[in-house]
Length: 260
Ligand code: APR
Image (cartoon, rainbow, N blue to C red; front, side, top):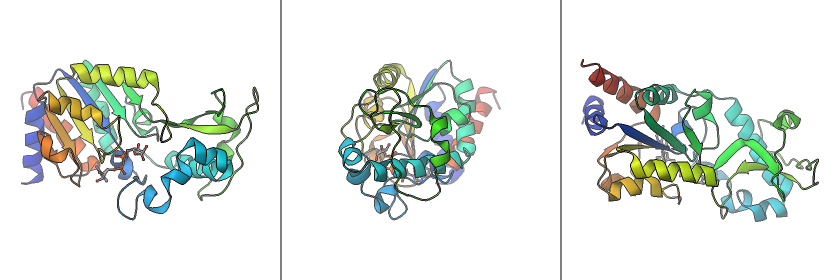
């Protein structure tokens, strides 16, 4: 099929929706230069072991290594710009009264690009807090520590309780932020259609969101150059990059809405 045929097929699936949900993963940011987790060779987990870096135990065992790795990731995402697919999602939001983006990404690019209805299921690289009591920590105190290379950096201590400062991301084995989960799971219960972009659909509970719509026979469009466990079950699995597919899809939906 041609790109236009994929686009037309995806737009046909979404055309009648009144309420829309979008679920995004690391592939959404790949076209902005942010590495994914599982893409062969280029993914973060190909170069770093998640058990060594993305768990509370790892942080307690070696706070400087874990803190330094997140500072590097924070530096990286602060240096990139949202691509055209992010702008397309901002336009898409304006077309629906009932719209939500539930992202697994911690890079803040949806909000930076102007999307308003966003929940960050796995937290944010921008939201540092103390390990033991969760006291928020002013990132202005550490912005200068964010560096372009992965180095070991001893985390600062909380001014209120002296516990070490940690990144505000969800580590393996931790529960997702309750408010974000509440909004995402109530939105998915009532949305007419769902677009899932740039996720390997392997990590739960976030991977459950498109499954919920698939199970009730609702329209689901997947945008991912590679196939995933979801691909055979969704309505349209568009083998395309987010930065290419999303702008084309939104242009097509807008043209349909305006009767072109
Ligand atoms: N456009 C769309 N999708 C893309 C692109 C692109 N340009 N480039 C890569 N992809 C796809 C890959 O094919 C892959 O299916 O993005 C997906 C990225 O998968 P992962 O690296 O597993 O990222 P993600 O699904 O977000 O991981 C979920 O796992 O490690 C945890 O907390 C971490 O939030 C993360 C979660």
